Amino acid sequence: MWNDLYAGNIFQVNQNNFEAEALALFRFQAEKNTVYREYINLLGIDPSKVSRLNEIPFLPIEFFKTHRVASTEFTTDLLFESSGTTGMVQSQHWVKDPAIYERSFLEGFHLFYGNVESWCVLGLLPSYLERSHSSLVYMVEALVKRSGHPSSGFYLYEHEKLETQLKALEAAGQKTLLIGVTFGLLDFADERTMDLSHTVVMETGGMKGRRQEWTRQEVHQLLKEKLGVSAVHSEYGMTELLSQAYSAGEGIFRPVPWLKLLVREEDDPLKMYPEGKGVLNIIDLANIYSCAFIATQDLGQVYPDGRFEVLGRVDHSDVRGCSLMLAM
Image 1 (tube, rainbow, N blue to C red):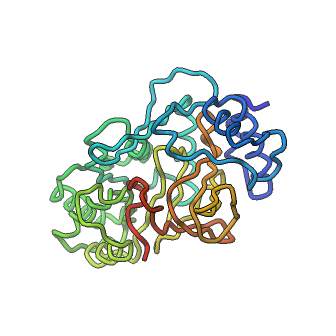
Image 2: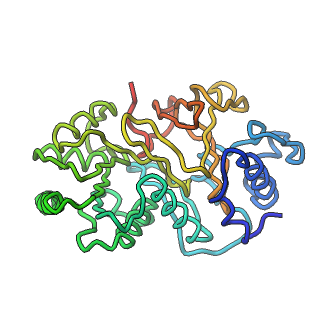
């Protein structure tokens, strides 16, 4: 039986035991998550007969907008809400144990970028800082605190102050992460030309309706030219997930080991494949107390080694901050 002591085990998963861990979590959530259980019943699926990853039913992500998606009964003060645009219904993700989220993003960062204590972390996240319940702000705020660097912090629209800070960090040879919402980075880069050879520039969050939509290639090309970096990194995350994937350039994301993507057919959502092009389904083992099996509306491609791309959105689906840009 899945229990609280089991939570730490998800961070030791690998390709050899991922399926077994996912199936154990599926059986727990099929019993303890009322919304997920009812959805499974409507599909006519017997959880005891599910024995492979591609047999697990994935909950449509829209349920996070209409229901409290929770495994077990619990009270919590931590709520994450999606940003959306004006008039759009927001997704809500109630987090029973903040320590699981914190361990997920801290260990994920360490896997891809090493000890956060060696970084100066600068957040350019105006649209997120201007609202409450942002999982991205929660994550970056924790990275800022963990970095311990005196210059780490957030910026709203203080572009001149940010430029001065980046130049000082460059002069000192300080390894720096500048993580920003896409429109914020473009606004910053429009006004100046820099040489950020010691800085990782990471975009996340899309345009938020603030600018005309650009392709990923257009965004990255401008940022590389104006900020003097050889590649633009990206973060893939969403309100409904407690784990992230990162790209070191060209929009090819690598997930943390406890996060796995499959593809489903758009016309037959119960047909899933471990690789290829289609609509992305996500297994996030950190989502112990919500739902770990989510059917997104992102079109993408999953490669044999587990890396993936986001290629766009399913027609008529809501525009999401994490995947506004078409890859082609």
